[in-house]
Length: 306
Image 1 (cartoon, rainbow, N blue to C red):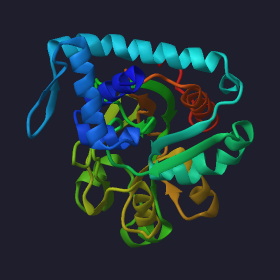
Image 2 (spheres, one colour):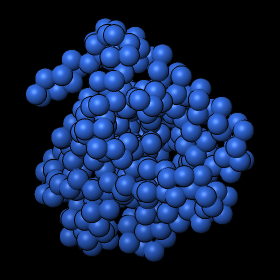
Image 3 (cartoon, rainbow, N blue to C red):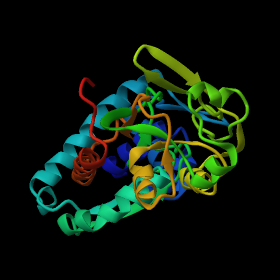
């Protein structure tokens, strides 16, 4: 038995809650992972995992052992990195998941600079607005808008998206220009709804002007669950949109969108980069985090006071 492989297999089974998922992320067969765990338990003379037909649960001894194993694996990785060129030139495969508009409009256009700086990193980019199982899908980190409610993740605040309300000229010609946010609740105006995967619902948006505060849900005729589709719907004149400024900016310049409710402000949407707490943050992940912070500082810096 290779003790390193066995400890790595055990840690991944605990993190994924599944022998099958652990085997897939380690590029091993399920049989190999099972045998490694059995050999590890035999060597330690304790049961580390309780197995049922539906799930795998760590025992009390297994939980204590897992905490030690994670630190040991991280120390081993640090030791190897410190004596190799990886500390100077991060390398290897990096899997990241980001929202689709952020990928299309900010991240992908900036990637040539990232690869010029780190040519030995191979990036697999998941582009979606869905909730990703970071451990189960073997994702190194995710970038998401809104507060991270999953307490099992480490979240780094990397930026704040300034929001506004916009409409296409065609929409305004047909429905008129709303003068006050309360009009969005009266039924004459349409909005495009965005379905948040985190809640499965569309969310109300808060607008403030001085001491006056309005919360508007709107009346969506169309609801979508993808940021690019959401923007396309607004450009097609299907309703008013709540958009980050970086998404609206090029369409404001071209005249495809018109800003609404001058003098009203919306709370900024925080952007977070999240990763599992018990997974060692490798050099390639660290440099990607630093690069994302640089990118967001240029386009959506953290608001003063956070």
